[in-house]
Length: 129
Figure 1 (tube, rainbow, N blue to C red):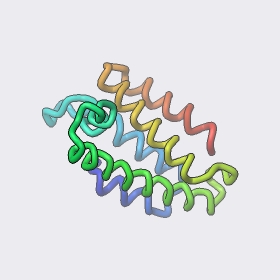
Figure 2 (cartoon, rainbow, N blue to C red):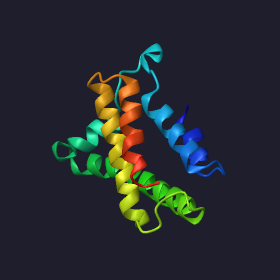
Figure 3 (cartoon, helix red, strand yellow):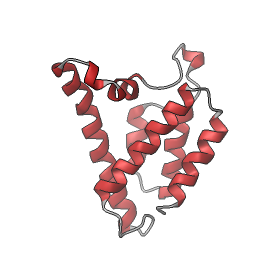
Figure 4 (cartoon, one colour):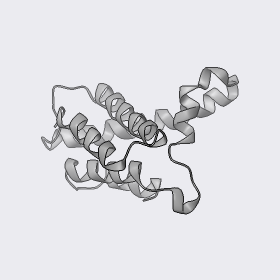
């Protein structure tokens, strides 16, 4: 699944649970057949961004800001449909989603089995739906 199709899914009328499944599928997809290593360069760069120059740090921060905004909008739509806890701010929930995704990608690069990652993400999201 490409990133544009994932973002389209966030804007779809599918239920939040189906969208979580799409997010999980995107996160744990097997990249090896495409010659792409497990993990995510952007996540790795964010983790070590203090070692980067100022211009590169700003470039690393921009996609994250856009992602957090997309998460916030996605969560607000889910809240309006009663599919996400209404008493959680969308800003906090967006950071939660981002942390879950980063953790899953990190686990994948560490060699954790995809099914374990799937179960871990589902456990995390069960606390907010």
